Amino acid sequence: MTISVIIPACDAEATIERALASLFRQTDGDWEAIIVADDRRDYAAFLSAKGVSDARLKFTSTGLIRSGCHHARNVGFDFISGAYVTQLDADDEISADRFATLKPLAERYGAAADSLLMLDEETGAELGTVMGKTATLAMIDLAAFMNLNAPLVPLIRRDHVMKRAPGIEFSEDVVANIQLIDRIGKLPVTAASSYFYRIHSRSMANTSGASERFERGYSEYIARLETGDGFGLKAANRRIAADGLIAKRDLNRAFMDAQRTEPGLTFQAFVGRM
Image (cartoon, rainbow, N blue to C red; front, top):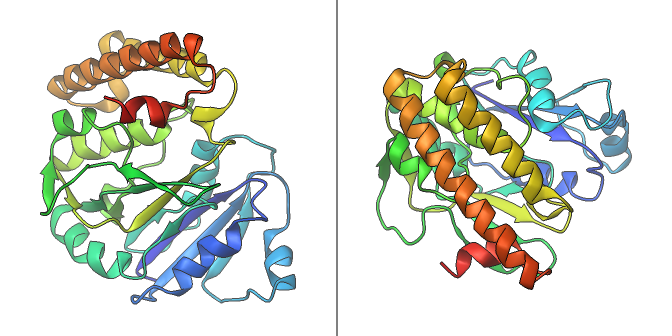
């Protein structure tokens, strides 16, 4: 298969059919999906009972319960066979032309992404795109990426694919994006949105104590960049990434301050005011 798609699944029975339906609609059907159970559920049996069966679907498990997306993605990594690799969360969707659009860009530049569209799971309302209003393909470097308020979901050429850094759960997509851009220099991002990221009450950023966990996570990553292993980045990019994460930590702190007077405020709503 040309494209390998890793899908971590945890308590995903209500949404995984929708995610897979968006794969089945791809105009480029040369893909495989590795579904990684992180809850010890048998998703092959569950989907079969629902009438969902396709030779392109592979199934494996972390053997654990809620070990984390980063671990589940790394387990799935050992089963990929495609020339390109990407991810799809079990509660998200992609547009029918995503693979056909991104694959030529990924072949040329090493990876490619889109201006991810954020949606409210409960209402279906559009919450905005990661790149804002743009009409043309953008080539973003690390400094530009660090100014974004959400990660990107790239399609990556196999020679630039890496396992996720161990010990990272909060903002693990951000760290993976940083490492990717460090490798390829600039990441092409299409103006059109082809990844639909569903935000719901169970999303990590909306759970109780999330801001405190992000505070600890950002502080740990900044320390690693400034005095530790630097996630393997080039020296100049370590500084750019550290400064960007300091800014994100400052934004998270401002959000925590705002929540003290508005307990029901979400991070997306807070950022939307800025």
